[in-house]
Length: 282
Length: 100
Image (cartoon, rainbow over all chains, first blue to last red; front, side, top):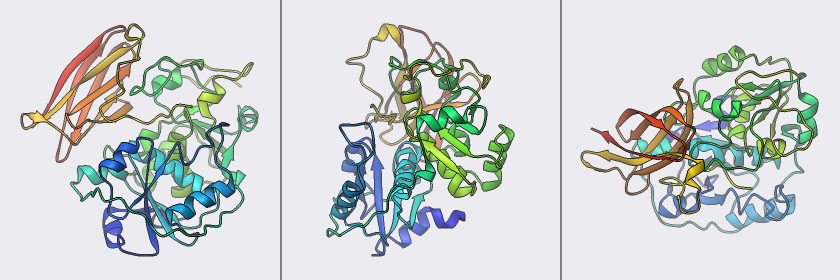
């Protein structure tokens, strides 16, 4: 997979705004962002209300995903370009989610909403409704999704990559520092996990660093590309960003995103937890 | 499950127990006025990125840090600025970030 098959820049986006084979999708958790303005022609996906089951902690079913994308006017052979706020965290999560359900051609707008805004590019407030389609999804590709038992078995065996900030990894913060810190999980990280914050992979404007820089970041932090890898964060969206880097940009094999992440692992009874800046022992 | 998403301007303090938080908040100004478009990044004592929020239409931002020294980086179209700040538990630290 090469970078230009999975990532587009603003110039490419502008050249394809009227291309009927391309659908732009803004993905946020803060729905007010899209309501205020968005890229011309973009439809909206809500990270929470559209992509989460709502009762159980899990994703929507294949049938519900088909109904959702059909309602949004997306076809399985569309090129879907995702972008959003939070340095594309939720767009990367949606990217991974689209891949989970087998969408063939999905790409990220490099830098997402932030880079677009900081460059003063046009945003519009007209809400777009594309004609409904019949979308056909595939069964979930579980080769890219890790569950808690996979993670426990991976301790000391596979690459575990904790992509949260150093303070969250060490247990000094329980959540990203834009959120209140009172949380129900214990603090710390999964023993043997390397701390490679997602932010190391992106420039200040949210765009991804070069492949050479990205590879060096992981190798210097001890990731062995001959081993399988599981990435996690707090709820799986920052780690989807790092999954995108490892699997889609760097082409690493057998990389899975643990969407349960610390909100699940940090609540499990009897599992090992490491505190402090070091990975800890298996 | 609550999201990790950053709320524009920062999470409201309405239902937050300030005694358990070390809050850093303020307003980004550009050319003497609140900046309606911009982002504020919080870096830790080693200058590692920790969090980021988009500013509100009035240029406001808010973080819930740990006690200690932090750096704020404001990004607005065409300009950036940095400022050092110290946070304390149970305190709200207010500061203005001025971008030329």
